[in-house]
Every structure is written in C-alpha cells, then in structure tokens.
Amino acid sequence: MPLLLTSNQLRGRGLTAQAISRAVSSGDLIRLRPGFYVDGEARELNRSQRHLMLVLAANAALDRPVFTHASAALIHGLPDYGLPLRTLSMAAEGSSNRGRSSRVARFRSVPDLSTVATSVDGLRVTNADRTVIDIALSTTRDTAVVTADAALKRRIITPESLAESLRNSAGRRGITQARHSVALVDPKSESVAETLSRLVFLDHGIPSPQTQVQITNEHGIVIARVDFLWPEFGVVGECDGFGKYFNGRTPLETQEQLAKEKDRDAELMALGYRVLHWRWRDIMQPDRLSARIRKVLYGAACS
Image (cartoon, rainbow, N blue to C red):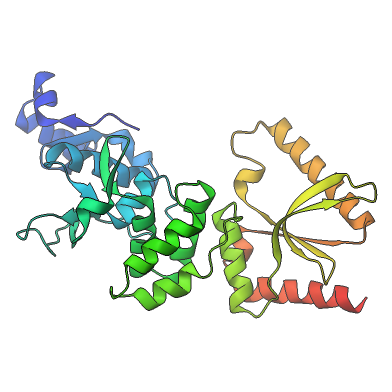
C-alpha cells in the first residue's frame, strides 16, 4: 500500500500549500480528505485498496473511529464482491454524528458498540460476526452469502457464533432478508465463484450438489478433491477461477497446472464420472450456465 502523507509531512519536504494544490491538479498527489494525501500512483490500486487508503486517512484524522459494514469487511480481509465502497462506513458514537453522511463517510448508529467493537491491525472495527450480519442486513443476498462464506473459510467466525449474532440482531431492519441469507452459507466454500455458483444452482432449480468432496479410486486412493459433486448423476463440477491457474504462477507453472488438471479429469472419467468446468464469465451468465449444467446432469442420468 502507498504511504499516507499529511499536509505537515509535505510541507516538511518543502512543498507550499500552492505546490500541494498544483500536485493534486496535475495528478502527482491524490487528496483523500482534508490534510491527507497519497502518491498519484495509487490510481493503480484496486477498489478495495483505494477504500482501505480512505480508512487509514480517516483513522489518522479522527478520534478513534470504529469502522463498520463494508469498511469493516475489508479490514477483516473479506472479499469486496458487491460491497458499496464509494464511502466509508463508521459507527456514530455521539448523537451529533448519528445518521450523518457526507461524500466520504456514512455514520451509522451502533447502540451496542462497546460489546461488538474490536481491533484489527490497529484499527477499531466491529467484530467479524457483527460485520457479516451488518452486511446481510444492508446488501443483497449474493453479497451477504459471499461475505459469510469467506468469513467462515478464514475461520474468523463459526456457524455457531454467526447464528448467535443473528439472534442478537432480532428486530433490526432487514432481519428477514439476513436470516434467509445466513441459511444459505456453506463453510466448505473456498471462493467467491464457488459461492455464486451455488446460488445459481438454487435460483435455477439445479439439484444441490455436495461441496468439496474427496473422490477415491478402486484402491481407496484419493485422486481428486472436487468443488461440486452430484453423486446421483455421476457428475463432477469444477469452478475455475482466474487465480487457480495464473495468480503468482510462471507460464511454465501454469502449463503444468493445466496438464495436471487434464490428467485428473481423465482419472475421474475413467471412474465413470462426467466432468464439467465453468469460469467466472459463465457465472455472470446464469441462464446459460444453468442450462448447460442441467443438460449434463440429465444427459448423464439418461445415459
């Protein structure tokens, strides 16, 4: 992450107020909030990283703020899928701030702040369970389930602690929607794409598969751990995210990974399974993806 710069630090480097203003106009500096800047190269940051720079600036400028909702989710290391990141979300501890919003921040009322606040990397934030429930109360079902699945995968919450936090939120606006979302979480989900795939199955009447299943050969040796398995249809489903092949890999390593997957698919097919792969772009076309899966499932069942 780029270094956060204050007006005082910039003046210490010999920049006058006019020079700072010119640097902002030229794009050499980005103004995060009054008195706080970052190098212009921060434009290359992704949306989560840009939001976290705003978090750091707010944390330095304000008196011990507590971050909530989408801001808290990022601080906890959760994915940004569907999160509203245009403004910061912070708890309103004083009545003067309660419900107030601005271009850079939305202040939210958190009556039980003293019991749900914690610290992550030096930042005050709502605890992970409360953050997940806040997201479930205030965003879409898909975003809520993605956030909850990711928190379970990272083991910063448990199914039991999430259920307790949900019970403690009874009566809050959006609680019915939150209950529906929490009922759909799967601790075995290993990526945003896997979570969204499950929701596509649900929305399009695809039978619910088993998730993260180990498949053995006739000698009891595990040959694969698959994302999805429809045992009654003899079909394996694999959701192939970009990172599976490319993140941090050299071209040779990517080629080797693809070859291993081809060999694994051959072993699965030798055991009588049909193997179906899909990617992120397929998930973004749920009607087409569901039709394709349904064709494989029922084609396999009839063969």
